[in-house]
Image (cartoon, rainbow, N blue to C red; front, side, top):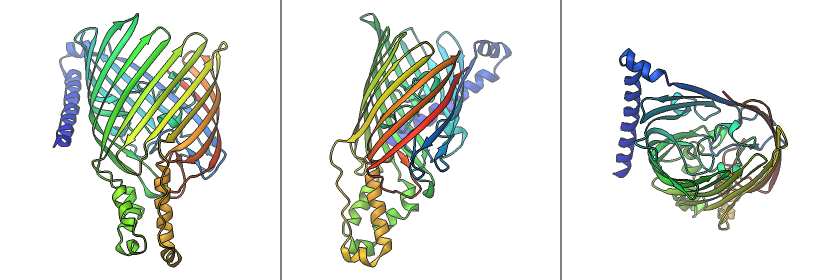
Length: 432
């Protein structure tokens, strides 16, 4: 019942935001002038290219992103274009819309709308926003799509890759206090989101509904320092359609398969995630002055969905400015908190008699292995701010993959184990 209430609330908020924005734009000429005069347009973009040393193993920016590579190369992995409009409606009301065009599992206006909200600021300390909002519980919450705003060519995938939703439809509230010479900001949020992801190129895309989605963040800013602690919990609804289309789930539920593989029925139940929740916890710190840029975050993912292991992730980034150049190094890792139990194999007779059973077993093992997410990466790079609001970045990365699903492969639910990959990326990032 509460899931239906959350969906109804979010739908109502979306309609309210749309009606208010439309009404303001279509109201009297005087009102329109009052709105349009403070309208501020801005934009950002990235044009990038990436080379992977392995033509069958391709890096991703985030979990569920489609494979953008052709052989060893991709220019679509990091490339994007964004535009943002901010309007000051009154002394207490403002609105913002942000659209981002990038490689997605589904290209649509809804998927491309990152923000679309109305904000109310009753005083200098409090803020209330409704509509489509950025998910705010980690350091890059406000500018994860804005490459110019951060040091690296791309955010560390071990930490940011498993964080599926970048936004949600709902409401958030924040309160700011002056404490110890800095600003202490507390925020809470509630809503839901539906996003399209692609687990494997060969099995198409899936709509993932997360409802309810809720959480909060406590941050402190003083001078060159930023500290942050946040959490977000999501509840899965429905089922991953690609598990059915690939034949994995129907195969495990087949009585004949279960006759030769008694554990298949248990694995079929495990794969269903409807009603299961996952909770993300994140703490981080960043220091930036005229010379140094240092940041680190630690994350913990706790999951009720059996195939998705509880994981611990972290990164440390250090950069040093030398004029217009900022060389940097990043170490990042993601590890399961417990050893991943191997998938129990079917009977020897079944494996010997049926190639389909061998394929099903391999796919099941690959799916469980992928969601274990166990890898580490060392990245070295430099950023060149050669022009106002334009930066050129070059980054080399070496990843040691023990297992995980932060990579794109050609085959459905293929297990990735004990691989080393090098990849080089270059990008031009700008804001206007």
